[in-house]
Length: 64
Image (cartoon, rainbow, N blue to C red; front, side, top):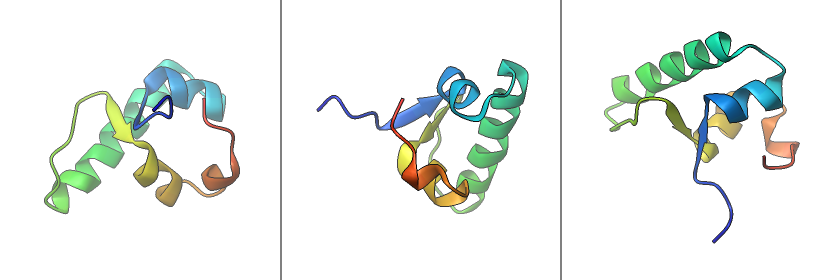
């Protein structure tokens, strides 16, 4: 049960090598997409499964 369910801005920043500001921008954009599809979202977090689906190459990465 140690596997993460959600990524936060810090996780994305480390994985992608981007600033925290850019990480939050990515989170907001992904959460907007999910909300547009009718899903409930959590500000500042994104489901790992969705992130891996949307971000090319993320499925092969080691989980942070």
